[in-house]
Length: 128
View 1 (cartoon, helix red, strand yellow):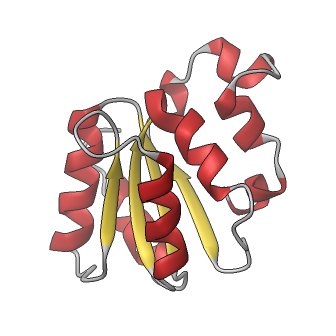
View 2 (tube, one colour):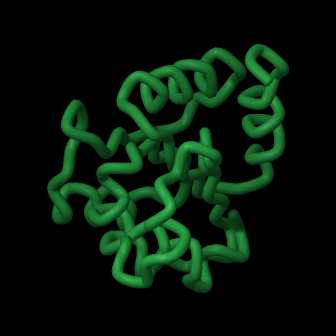
């Protein structure tokens, strides 16, 4: 499925949302997705949540609360921080895209203490 335009499709689909969150397994994909979105016309404000970006909850919450429109790109390993920061976010204009979903560990789907499980089974999951 490599090179079939999945990122372009997700970018075009997400244009009708003001809050976009892309979750990817590794930092390289986080950066790649962000660069592709910009290449495909996204020109809004963005934030990276990973060890290369930020993992500080206060910084992330301030970013979310200060911007009506944004794109957040986050690694699987930082989903714990993301979930805590978006738990009170209005999801009416939010889309969450999970890149490489097939690479999620089994615990993300079955362990109710896992942050990805919590995200997938929250009311936010209706927009995934």
